[in-house]
Length: 288
Image (cartoon, rainbow, N blue to C red; front, side):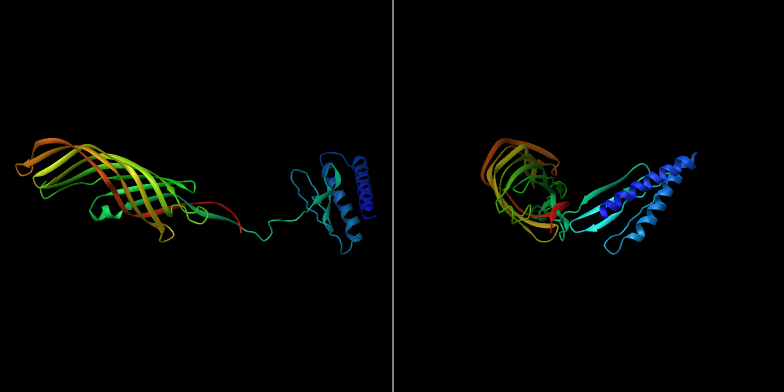
């Protein structure tokens, strides 16, 4: 009965307002007066006729001679009815409410490492400038790049340590990827690198235009704070270099070439105790 009453009332209001506006009003303000009349009649008809089980919600928006009544909702278990009155049409529709399956759950973002900047503290103690950059690739892989660049001359060229070398290492992280943080835990890797050098101790020195080192590595990284990791790494492989042996004369200003040679080494080719600074970015983590 309530639905039928609504439909009949709305149809009567529509017909009456159309008749009055057509026969009594004309001109540019016809539409505005017509909609205003509908609003007043609808308010007078509906507000006195409904009790505690219903409510009426009108939203009037006046812009460029357009006035609309936005919605009217009836409270019923499981669904709601909306009566919409517009300047051009009047209709009644059902609006699904449904259950909110996400109620009580909070979306959150989590911080995930996307880059690690590192330095080998063993080299730092020996005054050898160095830097490393590691990029995680998924949960189980990462790519590590390193650069070492000491370029020192001491005591009026009596001692020389000039090295320029770089390398790449691919790492596979061994621990359970669901339980550990990215870039932490045990890892195994394959590495390769090369460079050139000039090493002199008093009168004897060696220059190498190129050397290469490659092998396998094993290490462990531990998180010591939110953005700091401590990493231990040992590499075993082969190092091969071609060198020139020289003597320094005339107060170490003249180099006398002695002989050329080739050297190959099997065994440990790198050792690291690195401090890593972790840069994070936020990603969608899900719901709590």
